[in-house]
Image (cartoon, rainbow, N blue to C red; front, side):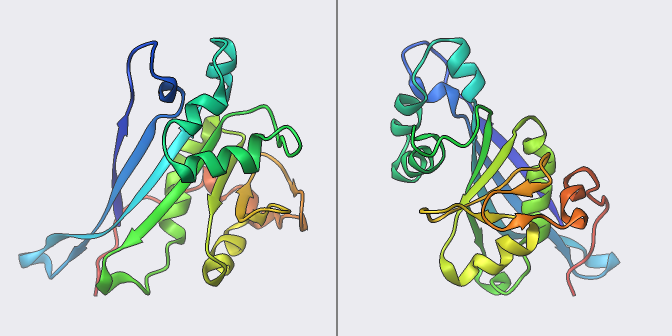
Amino acid sequence: MYIRFTIEVTCGEEEPSRFVPRVEGAVFDFAGDEADEREVLVGRIGAYLVQRGRSFDEGESLFDAMDSIDQSVHDCYCALFDPKNDIMSMDVLYIESIDLESQFKSMDITPIVRETIATFGSHCGLVAHEELPENAKVWTDIGFRKLADSDFYTYAPELLHQESDGPVPSSSVSWANRVRRGRRRLG
């Protein structure tokens, strides 16, 4: 399995969203035998790189930047950066969505999340995702912890302790730096 990422960056001083570039990923795997191997679209992942440090350095409002995109990104701001909840003064990778094609709905999304964090989260102090309760176990198994008074789950790759559930097992702390390479075929 592999992900083909693209990044959308807004240029120009007038757009506050330039501090929150969009990351899109198309997830593929290979199907068939060696003679008839073909690339198959498994799903898509959408995320944002919330560049808090850059907005601060340029004297721009992170609220204005995140509010200018959509409701989901605005909700992320409220959960993470609202003055009463202000988590940390660091950049954030916000994983907004993971959508699998119908024939792959039962597929484990863990490798997709891990590779996205390994690729884009290395300069971020926090990774966040808003998830429906029926999928909460996927995120907590990876090492995410539910943020109190919020629908958001957070993961701090460099921290050994997460706020809501105590220590994160050491086995889940360093995986972002040890992503396995190569490809595995579908059935």
